[in-house]
Image (cartoon, rainbow, N blue to C red; front, side, top):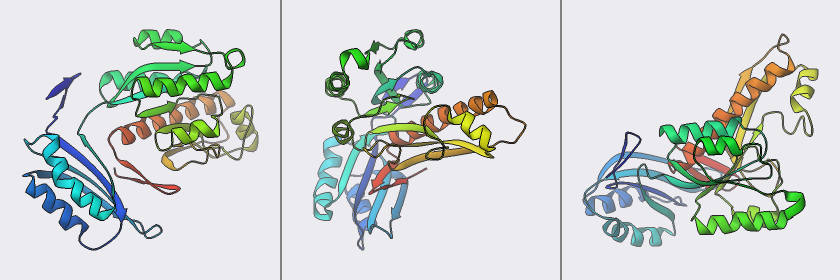
Length: 290
């Protein structure tokens, strides 16, 4: 058992996620395997996609057995089902690398909520292409590295990112308003474990000053979308979205403030969902267990 900022993390409380082609009897076979291992199910969620024909499950199991016993019960079944599966324990903090540029609102929210215990992640390092947020990282005692992509070269910076992913066994990379386009090679290397955030105006208002463009067009809704990173810019599988209504009385500064609030909240919630193994990929879509 581990205690982190008042949160009790029980290493005997297991979390199993599984996806496979849908077929009769999956729930019965999985629960029977859990019973065989003398486990007690504390939470179970499932979904079958009509579009892909795949079945998805997230189940929490409490027991005194160690990992090897659970794996021995599940592994043969998963092989027979040709399933993709993962076994972890509830509450384990997932190792997360954060990439930033100059905007600090989403980084501040991530760091605060990580420190408070709301986000089950640990951040060993922040990498940036500007030094603007170094003091913020220092306040939270998180190491910060700065690379000028013009001087160091984009390829060298991306190599450093991959080196850090390997060195720290990173499970999640968060682009917290990192204003650089990742190469297709890096996107491929981070498939299913890199999350980005963008405002809800895309693709309507691209380029510089999207909030001013939105104000000039008189938008009535603003928001944010958190999604997995792919080589198709800002078009990866969506994890979380939020919107807020606005009206004609609001100026550009007010729109920006509200938009940043939505970005911070949306990215934090997406990271939390991922860290708790509640997000499963289904092709270009996601299955998100709340």
